[in-house]
Image (cartoon, rainbow, N blue to C red; front, side):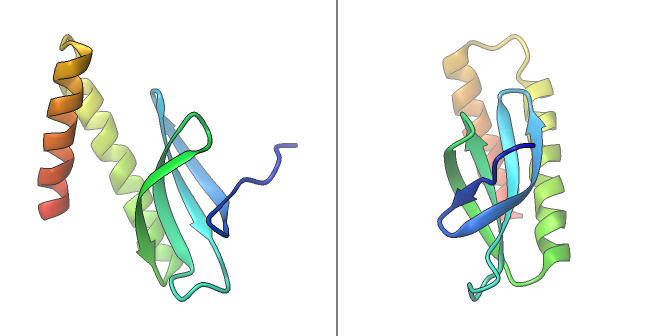
Length: 98
């Protein structure tokens, strides 16, 4: 049995690994926005949180973020680490602006 993971008062209830990156869904029944999705590295470094008041919107965001990461990793094959970081940031910004 895996230990419970908690970040910022949110229990991680779903996770979706994509390569070296993981996307997680957290829930805090006491928070105004009860659900959050984060990108996570190393199993404990959570960042770029998207907050939601309903589960379905949070799940849609979780899958959208994972799908974007799959697309990004496929499109960056063959680039150096520095080029990947730069291009990945650009792709994310463009995606967030939609």
